[in-house]
Image (tube, rainbow, N blue to C red; front, side, top):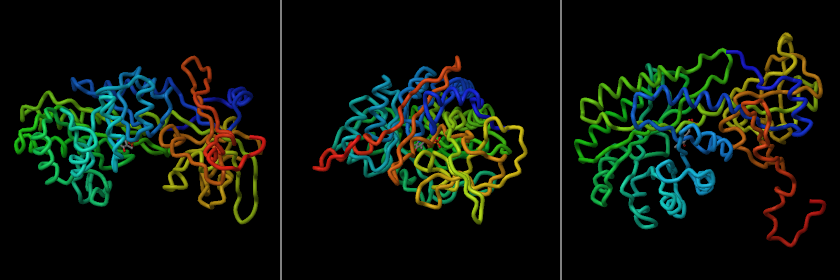
Length: 421
Ligand SMILES: *Cc1c(COP(=O)(O)O)cnc(C)c1O
C-alpha cells in the first residue's frame, strides 16, 4: 500500500511556522478508526478488552484517546502507572505486565487496583513480601523452544527472559490458589511485529490448551486469557497488511474448538497491542539540512536516531517520502542520516528517493509506536515535540520539544552552574 504523509507540503509549511522540525505527529482519526476495527473484530467475545501498551506511545493525550475508545492500559513501570492514573485509567483497566519488577512498582500497581501479570515463579513470594497476593492475578507463560507458524521459525521463546515454564505455571497456580487467589488469567508474548494472520490464532490455541490443562490439574478459575502484543504492521509499502477481521475470526475458531467444549466459553480475551494500535498513525517529520558527496551520497536531517532508534537498533526499515515530490522518479540513491557520532545513525541506506534539496521536508513513516518513546539524549541531542493532527485537521502540541534546560536539569545536585539556560 502506498504510504503518504498525513500532511501535504503546504500544510507542513504552515505547521512548521509554529512548531519547527523535527517532530512526531499522530493522526487521531486513523487511531480511532483502527481501534474501532479491532474492537469489532473481537466483538464475538463478551469480555474482550484491549489494554494499549503504554510503552509504545507514552503520551497522556494518546492514552486519553485510547481510554475514550474503550481500551485499558498495559503498564510496565512506575511512571507508566502514573501516566495511567493521570488520565483516570485505574482498577481493572490497568494490566501491569512487567518483568524484573521493583518492589515499589508492585505496591503502586496494587494501590491503583491494577491486574498484576506475574512474569516469574519467584515473584509469587516477592509480591507476597512487598505487597500482597490479590484475589485476581495473571501469570505469563513461556513455552520454550522455537515458535513456528506455517513451518517457518517466528521467534525463539527458549532464549527469551520472560515468563514461567510449563511446570512452574502449574505449580504457581496451585500455590497462588492456596494463598487465596480466586480468579486467574493467562498471558504469553511469543513473537513481535508479526505480519501474518496466523500468529494470534496459533498463540490462542497454545494458551487455550494450556488453560484447559491448568483448570484440570489445579482447579483454577480462569477468567481471562491475554494474547498480549505482537500483531505487526507492514513497514514496507509492498508488504501485505494483517487483516484484523481474519485474526479475530481465527481466534474465535480456536475458542469454539478448545475452550467452549471444556466449559470455558465465558473466558474473556484480552490483548495488549502497541504497534498495531499506533505505529501507522505516527510520522517523524524532519528537514534536509545537509548534503554530502563522498564515496556515497548522503542527505543529513535535523532529526537523528535519538528521535527514532529502530533503524539504528534493529536495522528496521522505515519508509521515507518527500512531500511535494510524490510524483517525481525515485532516481537518486541516498543514505539518509542524522547527526550522531555513530555510523549507524542512518534512517535509510542505499534508498532510492527523488532528488532531495536542502530545506525539503523528509517524512519518516510508521513511527507512531516505539518511536519517540525509545528516544534518548546521546551526543546531547534533545527529544522532539509530539503533535496531534485532530479530526478537524487542526494541529495540537501534545508534548513540547526538550530544551537545553531539560538536558541540564539533573545537574541541579552539582555546584556547577550553566549559563544562558
Ligand atoms: C511491548 C509489549 C507489548 C506491546 O507489543 P507490540 O509489539 O507493540 O504490540 C505488549 N505486552 C507486553 C508485555 C510488552 O512488553
